[in-house]
Amino acid sequence: MHNRFRRYFAGAALALVGAVLMACGIARGEMAVVLAKATRICLECIGIG
Image 1 (tube, rainbow, N blue to C red):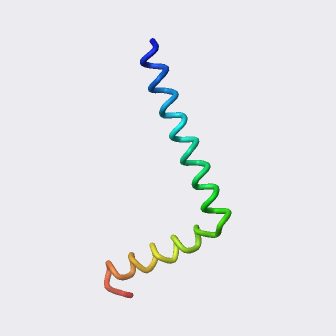
Image 2: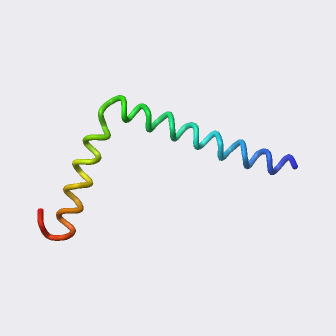
C-alpha cells in the first residue's frame, strides 16, 4: 500500500510542476513563439516554407 501511495504522489507532483511551468510560459508569452516555430517547421516539412 505504501508503494502505491508513493507512485501516486510522484505522478501528481510531476503533473503539478508541469502545469506550473506551462502557466509560467504562457504568462511570459512563449506560447506565440512556440506556435510560430511549430508552424514554420511544419511548412518546411511539407515543402511549402
